[in-house]
Structure formats: C-alpha cells, structure tokens
Amino acid sequence: MSETILPPPIKADPPVEAQIAALARRYRGARGLGLRLMGTLGAQAETLLDRLPHSARSGLDAATMRALELSFSAAHASRGTVPDTGQWLTRALTAGTGAAGGFGGLPSALAELPLTTTVMLRAIQGIAAEHGFDPSHDDTRAECLQVFASAGPLEEDDGTDLSFLTLRMTVSGTTMQALLKQVAPKLALVLGQKLAAQTVPVLGAVTGAAINYTFTSYYQEMAHVSFGLRKLAEETGTDRAQLIAEFRTQVSKRA
Image (tube, rainbow, N blue to C red; front, side):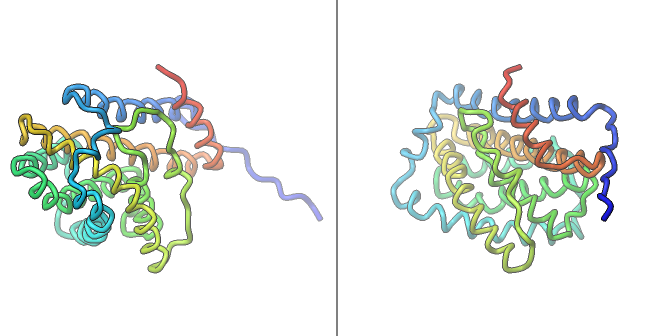
C-alpha cells in the first residue's frame, strides 16, 4: 500500500507565528483590564466571594445554570430579529445593565444576571460570525458556550486555564445540555466574583457599570482568541492542537 501524503500547511499572511503572538497579547491584555479594575476598587479577587451572603453563594450554581440556559436560547433566537452590534456598543449596553444592577445592590445584581449573560453570549456569537463561522451551527454554538469556560478577567495567573480551547465533544441536543452543565459551575465562580464586586458599597451603579464593561470586554477577547485559532487552523491546514500549544507558549511570555 502506498503511504498517504498530506499536503503541506498553507502559508498564512501574516505568518502563523505573528498571528498567534497577537492573539496571546489579546489574551494577556483582557486579563490585565480586570486586575486593574480590582486595584481601583481596592479588592482582591480571591476574597470577593466571601462578601456574598451564604444564601447567595449556595444558590449561585443553580442561578447561573438558569441564566445560562435562558441566555443560550435567547441569544440564538435574537439573531433573526436583532442585528449584531459593534464591540464598543455591546460593552456600553452591558455597562448600562451593570449600572442598573449595581444601583440596588445584590438583589438587583442577581436580577440583572440573565440579561447581561445573554448580551455577552450574543456578542460572542457575533464574533464567531465575524471570523466566518455560522452561529446557527451546533459546533459553533458549542464553541461560543465554551468561551464562558475560560477563567474570568479577575484571575491573577495568565495561562492557568486554557482548557476551554481544547474542550471538544460530539455536538447533539443531549451533549449540548451536558456542555451547559459542564460550563455552569466554572461560570458560577466567575459570576460570583462579579456579583460580589457589584455589592461594594462605593459608587454602586458606577461599580456595576465598570464590572460589566470589564467582563464583556474579557469574553469578547476570549471569543477572538478561540475563533481566531480555529480560523487559522482551517485556513492553513495546521493541526489546531499544535496551534494551541504554540499559543500557550506565547501566553506564558511577558510582553
């Protein structure tokens, strides 16, 4: 039998290495914004959850799952009637919802959670479309959801949790629900930090707006990273795992 010879990868312009380095800079920059915000608030991410009442902490997983299920359906359904907005307009919109949520403390912040989650997920879908992927396809919808599995913008260590880039499953209705359940606990920890920061009794509405702006910016950047790597793999014929390995290396470098 003759050996099958695969075609060589197609050269990218700009070169693959340069594109990966640019994506790594986006990743590091997105995290930096969150840490700068925490510095402004005088808070530490690891202690934020301690500020939440026990009742809120214990119900966070269930609340996040409900918000995620609602957002997953609503964000997709809205694509037929509401056009995509630009990144800055989306950030402004979630800043507005954050201001409203922060104005009334924890109760209003919890009520605002599904709306903000929907807007962020819809923004991620828009970025998928921007990179040439159809948000109505199950695999693209799953990858949009996986972006929420990345560690949040308040985490200290760059590159400690990039598993969302390699998380893969055969997509069907059943496995999509399984993916929701897989993502929800990780997102609950992140949103718990967000909720706690919104309860800081200093400039409540302003704090809520700033927190939402930061979270929206972060997940938009993670979407660019995820779909940027996917597009690069498809355009060049390079194995995605190889690109992710190089991306990890670039992330670990300090600019």
